Image 1 (cartoon, rainbow, N blue to C red):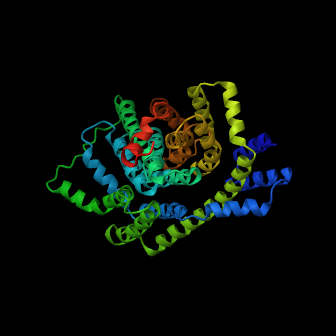
Image 2: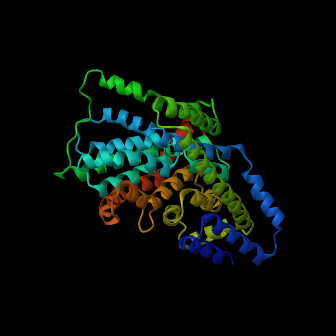
Image 3: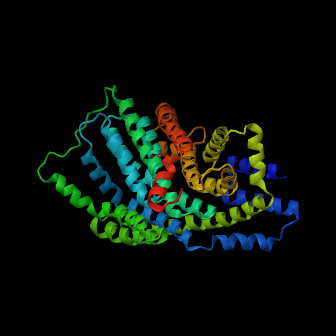
Length: 431
C-alpha cells in the first residue's frame, strides 16, 4: 500500500493536482486504508510540528522579496555590480549572475530572484547583442543561487524538518553556491566569445565621480544583505528576526529612497505574501501528517533496504539518491520537494554515515538542478516567459550550463563532503 501511495503521489503531481491537495489526498488514503491511526493524533502532530517561530521567517522573506522587487532595490544592486566588470565579451551575463546571488542573499527565493533581476537584466542583455535564448537560460540558472546563497527558504524548512541548526544548513550551501556562480559565469563567457553579434560593452564608468555616485546610490540596497547576513552569522539575530528586519528596512528604502514602492504595490506585496504563506502552511501540515505515517510504517528503512539491494557501496547509493532527488525537483516546486524528501531521506543517509549537514547541501543542489532540467524545468520555462525566448532557443545553452556547471557542482558537493561541512565546522564546530 505504501508503494502505491508513493506512486500515486508522484502521478497526481505530474497531472497538475495542486501540491497541498496531492499530499492531503495521499495522507487520507493511507489513513482510511490502514485503519490503524487516530486522525486526532495525526492532525495534532502536524499542527504541533508547524507551531514554531522559525517558520515565520519564510513568509517574512517572501514579503521582503516582493517589496525589493517593487521598490527598485534590485536595479541598484545591478548598477553596482556593473562597476566590477570591465571590457569582457558577455560581461553583462556575469553581472546578472552576481546580482542574482546578491538578491538571493536577502530573499532566499529563486522565483523572486528571476522575477526581479531577470526583468531588469533582459533588456540590458538584448541591447548587448546576447541571444535571447542564452539570456533566458543564464538568468534561469542564476536564479537558483537564491536557493543556495543564504538565507535560503528551503534550508529553513530542511533544518526544521531534520532538527538541525539553521545556521549550519545555511553555511553548508555557501561554497556550492559560489562554485556554481563561478561556473555559470565562465560558461557564459565561453559560449559568447565567438559570437559576432555580442557587443563588448564597456561597463566601467568613465565620468569623474560616477563610480562614487553609484556606490552612494546603491549603499542602502547593499546594506540589506549586510544587515541580514551579518545579523544571522554574528548571532545578533535569529533567521526569523533577520527576515523581519529585512522587511522593515526595505519599506522605507523602496518607498522614500528609490521611490519604486508605494502604498498600492506594498498592499499587493502583503496580500501576495499572505496567500503564499497560507498555501505553504496548509501544505506543511499535510506533509507532517503524511511523513508521520511514513515514519511509523518504517518507510526510511524500507528505502534503505531497497538501495542496499542495488549496491552496498555508499558512493553508488548516493548516486541513486541524486537521480531520485533531481527527478523530484523536476516535478515539484522546491518547497514541496524539501517537505517530501527530508523526512524520508534524512534517516536513510544518517544510517549510511552521511552527515545531515552535508546532505542539506546535496539536497539543495539537487533540487536546484531539477528546477532547470527539461522536460519539466519550471524555472527554465519561467525564464523563457520573462525573457520572451522560445524553449528551442534556450535548450542548447541550458544543457551546456547543466552539463558543465550543475553536474560538476553536484558531483563535487556529493563526493567531497568538506565542500558542505567546512564552514559549519569552522564557524560553529558542527560537522
